[in-house]
Image (cartoon, rainbow, N blue to C red):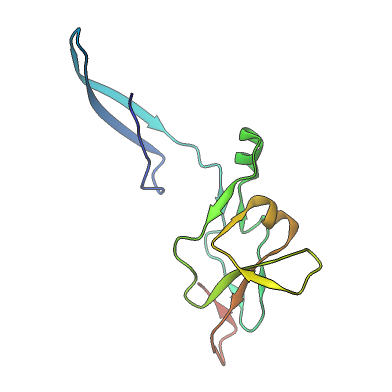
Length: 130
């Protein structure tokens, strides 16, 4: 069994060389070429207005191609939270109550319940790049 985990998400190609040992013999110098197609689209330079919560949309983060290919609802995990705010989710679409979250789904983005709540005093600054 061979397991591979892509850790550098900025590369789309990688070469893996491995050896295989069995009771019958050994295979050395085996090469596996890996090509990855990104199925999650991320806006490269998100800028949000100061003083207002920003509603995430599929223009900002879109995994619908992955969802369609896998027949699933892709789940995202916040590994490093924003330094000038927090990511929150409305409990219901028409609700004014927000909850801090560490995970969210593509359906949350599509339904408009995922927001960046800016939590900093940026007097005199109109745009924030977090």
